[in-house]
Image 1 (cartoon, rainbow, N blue to C red):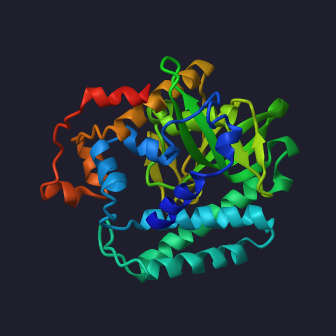
Image 2: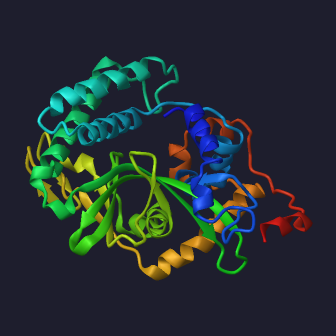
Image 3: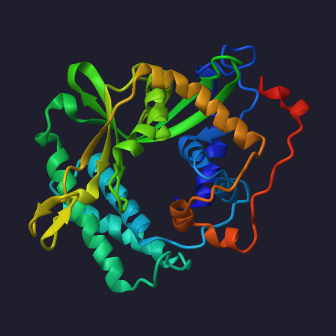
Length: 341
């Protein structure tokens, strides 16, 4: 999705009828003075380096490079979504070919340099082949016939909305999110699954700290989700669990290897691809205040550069920082902060 399309989509959400349904109307129980729609991805970005957030969302600087891994991820997500929407489980190669053609067309119109090195036709072909392997492995494990009915996918790319209220100040803000998948779980409960294709599998520390998953769970409980017919549907429950579905671990090793002290033979899968994410109700309740805190940082432009070596090396705006766009202390007129409360 292009940056322009993303911003247009959020602008279209600003006047959506869902906000009134959630209580945001004059005199309503969750009336929002700030009508901005804060997406979960935007909030997650602001949880990292706020200066990188500023360059992306405030200054709207275009990304300086493109990553082959991101292209592979978009292709994989696109193909999996088509499998579900078209129920094309017996035609995986054909569905993938359509998704690949669309992704290649988009690649030809992107003239940014590659993030790590020059990539050629062979590199793109290898990335596409890896994507196909992931999609085929996903299809084999997630086709409806392979799953009990209560564990099947209920919604894909579910567009959700919620209004968070600060527990102390009662200030309300609008939040949107897109959940890769909402699945059934045992005993009429639900599971939120997020599909990932990045270069590194998640650590337990990362999963425990991920605010994006906590926002997803909070939205499932408090929010409304669009249906295929344009209606609104509440789930009114926290997910029983959530899953970080790391598809690269479904790509077999080409040669013998060792990972985290475990030996693998050529042809072995790279380990588990399902990483559970658990949150308590207390963590969800704290998230409302945390979201409000993040939004206050955004609204009052309290942006500071985070000199984290690893994060800086991976940043898509590192050149802009290196040539002199440095963080500076922001003067805040405390008298003008009253509208937050």
